[in-house]
Image 1 (cartoon, rainbow, N blue to C red):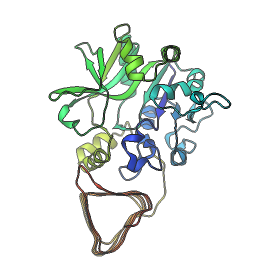
Image 2: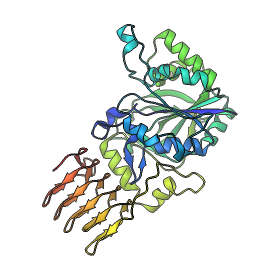
Image 3: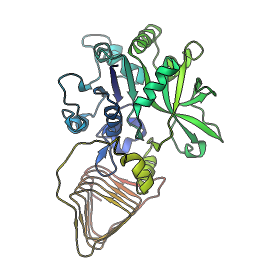
Image 4: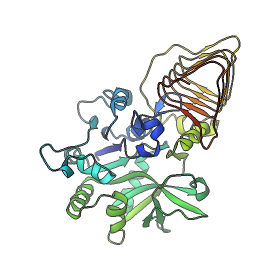
Length: 377
């Protein structure tokens, strides 16, 4: 059975403007050494899916640098492998044909060449804003058993965990795991089935849905393709039971990252020997811990220099923490430099940020203090 994958790299960029100003959502750094797309790609590769298209929109230079030829995911292949799918723009046509896509459905319209030529029986669709480690073979088998037109992976969550979230799709699921409604209304109490935007369907069914969408002028996959066909076709929900987070704001990026300081959460996501999360390999020198360094409950990547105190924090490659500095509850991305006698609490720095001596910077876990890429404070 041949299966292909499609990954949407830019769909949710608007929810994280701080970190997507110069990159896609897919290439946002995460957990010391990974990028968010690593989870979508690894989930597919670990499930035997080796023909994958990555739909791009803009700002995808860093994404291309990260993926390269795909060898780190065993996707450097003569047949199949990984393909970057830039937005399709028709030359010498009207303005409507020359604009970039604005929705998931329009992105799929532009990827029809890949869909038509991949030769797969089933296609798995995935976003890059979800962080989870899932066996997609179970989802595909459940989809085939159900006889559904489409299977949507959902996560049962308490609404109190969603109050600070952006607008998202909620599935109403009956006792037979059949989706009866798709909504963006979040009730005030109880539990809901949150869409992870991981979907499985037959390639021919996807082709027919795209043809129908073009003919009828649809522009929303969830509200038009799914919502308007709920009474006509069988839409199935696969409830994921494992550790999951949907990153839809800077605050959620911060809290999700901080959860990985918990050993159990980190093991669920990154510690499964049968479903390893792959990423681009970089050879760096070991981290140097100087005489006055003090580190507790932190994740620190290779190539760092630690001269001060680091507590409950995540440091990416090449971070320098100078003498007398205290870093607490913070995320410092690659090659951040922190000067002497600095105090940081609930701070996120993008790559190549620089913080000069004697600065005191503090945010809150729901609204971290953010320093942009290459900025000096």
